[in-house]
Image 1: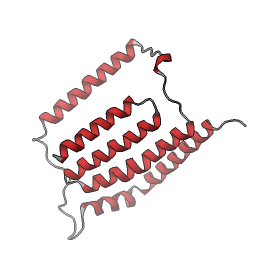
Image 2 (image 1 turned 135 degrees about the vertical axis):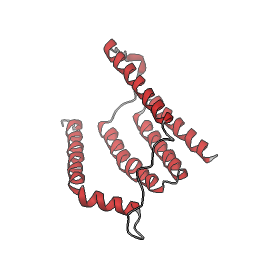
Image 3 (image 1 turned 30 degrees about the vertical axis):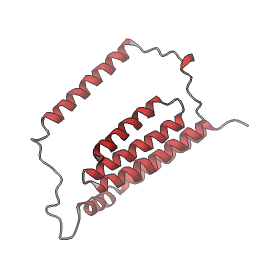
Amino acid sequence: MLFYLFGAAAVAASLMVIGQRNPMYSVLFLIASFAALAGLYVLLDAPFVAVIQIIIYAGAIMVLFLFVVMLLNAPQEDISRVRVMVAPSTRRIGALLVVVLLAELAWALATAGEREVWVSAEGLPEGESSVRALGLTLFRDYAFAFEVTSVLILVAMLGAVVLAKREL
C-alpha cells in the first residue's frame, strides 16, 4: 500500500514539475518528487540510498537550483506569446532517443531475473558494513575528484552571479 502511495506521489509531483509556469513551484515539486523516491528506497530496504537521496538531491542540489532561480529572477512563463519552432532533425533525434530508451527498458525488464547482484558484503572484515567500505573508498581513493567537483560547482555558481548581476 505504501509503495503505491509513494509511487503515485512521485509521478504526480513529477508531472507538476513540468506543468508549472512558475519555476519556483517547479523546484518545490521536484523536491517533493525526490522525497517520494526516498520513501520508495526505504521500502526497498535501501536506507543508505534514501538518506543520500534526501541529503544530496533534495538538500544540496535543489538548494542550488532554488538559489539560481531566485538569483536570475525568472518570470512566469507566458505560453500565449511563445511559439516553439522545432527543426525536423531535432524531432527525429528525439524520436530516436525515445526508441532507444524503450529498448533499454524492455531489455532491463526481460533480463532482470538473469543478472547477478554484483555488490556483496563478502570479504569485508567482521563488523564492517559495505556502506563504511564505500565511504572509505570514496574519500580515500577519490578525494581529488571530490575536490575538483566542488571547485567546478563554485565556479559555476560564481558565473551565475556574474551573469545575473545588474548594472547600477
